[in-house]
Amino acid sequence: MAKRMIEGVEIETGSGNVFADLGLPDAEKLKIKSGLVIEITRAVRRLGLTQEEAGRRMGIPQPKVSGMMRGDFANLSERKLMECLNRLGYDIEIKVRPAAEPIGHLTLAIA
Image: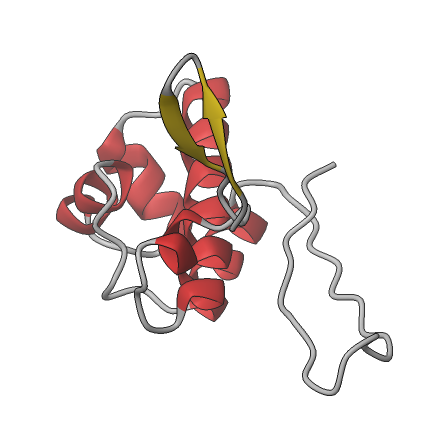
């Protein structure tokens, strides 16, 4: 992360992944999961679903929907979150390509 001074205040530019910037383990996974949860929340609102209706449609209990919409998604896998989006009417495309570096990265692109 790059540091610079603006009006006497040191500013540190983030990496683009707040979870990595905080030093959390599995930062890339957390970024992917949080992006999926954001899209699920948008879809639920766009469809005008209650948490109970959303839970039935996604195949998870309402308390998990509530927790997820409040940012508690640790107990949900990326696969389950993708399944929830599918059940809310979203297509998901997984694209694999050779990495530019020795170890590849996970990214989430929202159309």
